[in-house]
Image (tube, rainbow, N blue to C red; front, side):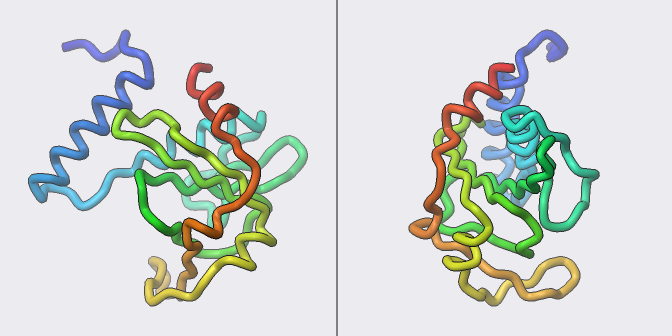
Length: 150
């Protein structure tokens, strides 16, 4: 089987199916598809991806706006480690890895809606969570779907 000629979305759909089966079997706990959605935000903004592991944000636009990207299938909340960003882009994706909904939320609105939680990040720092009803902002669904096809 050669994957070299398959489109990116077809590969992501295959990866999603494999990840789902591995989770069902208890072989893995999660998958890291988030990098794909960070790439879509970079494409949509004309921005650049920050080096892996940069705390607080994943993309910087040509105007200097810092974007944090949180992608998930259907969780009722978003984990937040810090507020070191200007805009939070929340992406909901389907089993085929395609963008179903994307919302850009200014950091001020995230701060207003975020709540403390018991989780801690890798450094042991307390985290916050943003309930899904608080994810109110600009609809970016069409922008990211357009970037998927680029």
